[in-house]
Length: 127
Image (cartoon, rainbow, N blue to C red; front, side, top):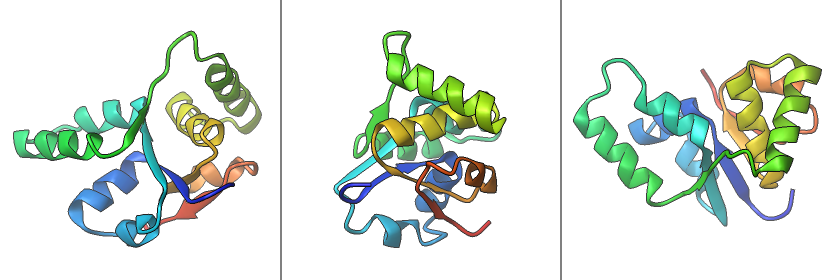
């Protein structure tokens, strides 16, 4: 992995916005921070999400790169499909892992399922 590039999984975003889990320490010298469109969808679909939570998340999104997913993103799509098939991850997790890989970023997550993807650089957070 070149530089300090990080892609945040949904649990890392939640921990960061709560000021928990040491995520801020991990990101301190980052040159690039991103989230997958999957993380945006997961966060905004939480039951019990308040308007204040949604507003805070919107402010957060203004500060990071949002990695989209379209049918034209052939490398991302192919990588997600390969990860899904080879490592048997749930499709949303395969897309998040692929988003980190194609953006040459370490994945920040508490989800140990990502450990199966040995080509993925991961910063593990405590549950």
